[in-house]
Image (cartoon, rainbow, N blue to C red; front, top):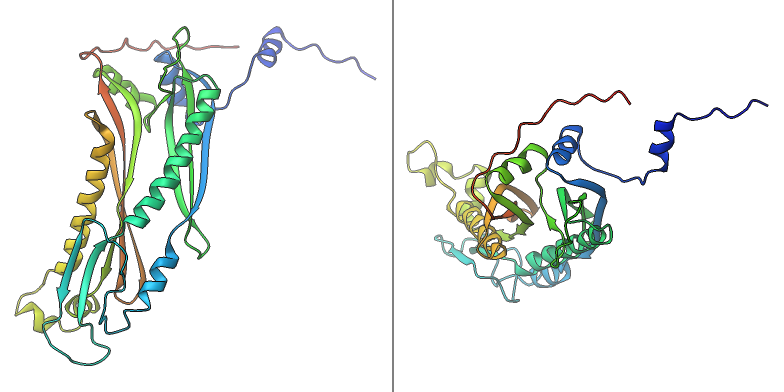
Length: 303
């Protein structure tokens, strides 16, 4: 039996040191160290929540194909817009009216799930003794067909050696690496991530249905090559305005940086469309004038 090989002193020191996990790329990790931020671990949060889909299906059955009464008798949000049929009674299957309306119960469910997952990530970062969480990534997906939303959020918790922990908990940001370094150079400090969603349901009117299907184009285009679908335009415009207002409410006087807006559409049935914009960004606060950081020095380590 051979004698165990003695490890080099460098390897022994590396194994004896405390370990940490990180979700940063090599370049982002290097920029993090250059800014004086020390990674301490990967913080994560999770939540699964069920939407109020039963309310929708119970009320939608009242409307019927002719839309004689509204499919929703529950309280709508701030945005509601009605579209009347100009043809009169054509047939039982004809859409007598159309409607765009905000769905606050969907927005509330999304906010609850995201907030709970976010709080758990911040709690993990606090346990790690972190000053902040950078490089945050979040994902929202549906589970099955039961209206269950799954929220997962993660980021790399960091600390500043020698600095007392903030009383209000760690700051958070989607930024990392050079993007984070640039806003600090500009005199801003990250406060928290900002995420908001709005939901607008579209029940197509007869004209909207004709135009979406491509039928009746000659009748409504009046000799032009194209025609605007007013109901869809109004719904998308309102959904974007709503999500921007929700994001502003989270800023509390601070600024929003690095905004991303993604719009998800889902067609539940013919003429039944949901428009759901999701806005993400970074809440930042000015704390000093522009102050360029020192130019990084190239360092090569052989051990």
